[in-house]
Amino acid sequence: MVRHLAIVGATGAVGREVCALITESQLRVGRVFLLASKRGAGERIRVFGEDVEVRELTESAFDGVDYAIFTAGAECSRKWVPFAVGVGTVVIDNSSAFRTDSDVPLIVPEINPGDIELHGGIVANPNCSTIILTVPVWPLCRTHPISRIAVSTYQAASGAGAAAMEELRSQTRDLLAGGSIEPGVFPHPIAFNLFSHDSPIGKDGYNAEERKMIDETRKIFHEPSLPITATCIRVPVLRAHSESINLTFERPITPDEVRAILSNAPGVEVVDDVDAGRFPMPVDATGRDSILVGRIRQDVSQPDNRGIELFVCGDQLRKGAALNAIQILKLLSH
Image 1 (cartoon, rainbow, N blue to C red):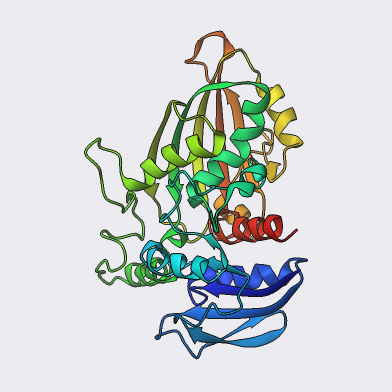
Image 2: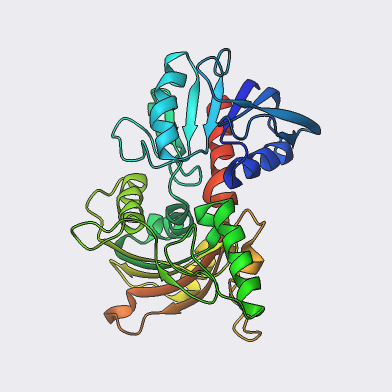
């Protein structure tokens, strides 16, 4: 039982999803506190059948709070998470603020639940694209060691929040009506367009999203030197990210073996109907807990049947963020 739970950033896209999923979950929660900036305070959000008023995030907001789920971004987390931990609250942080800290466990419950015992008051929720990658890849590498991962992402507007989703809607309406558009949330037009992920590019040429996928996957898998490369692209999809994954294994593996392993893997649903031409799509992944996996085939460019291609889709707001945080909360509270 969770006596007192705080949701920080409750008025944002992920925060609202946490509120909805915590209601659907079978967790017993005594009282929920919804927290946001001064601008969002006073709004009411339905949780467990009640309209709960959003309070302003202040120093007294964590008094008596057992657990807090932070969904308000890295800047907010850096400021407020240490304070919350200092007054005895255990924090599940959905931002990038603490993910690479060596003393903060980075948890995907289907993969490394045991790492949660190492927490010192903070548990990090991985990047959404990392979760969508690792959930289907992990069951494969448990039986067939992987020597390389190459992934390309097709990331929905939902990854940049509620305002970005609205920008996609409004730009689409304006262009279809013959009007012109000006980017706001994104640096480029998102309607009928795609572009390199809108995060800073480092000296190595990788943007921050690509670097997150590389570093976080290595940490979750406990494989600090695992060869991984990523290319992250923003696409005009409202919700649910897609990824094309190319895997190199240390020994031969067939598509049928991959299907058999993934058919019994937690958090995964195989959608791979060649005859009907039915494979993972964002519209089907939206609102679903599972990561959809299909287009399972041998990579003919790699020798000795050691290469496999996959295409996956996952709801960025659900398993990519809010659901994973709630699963972490269940681990902590049991």
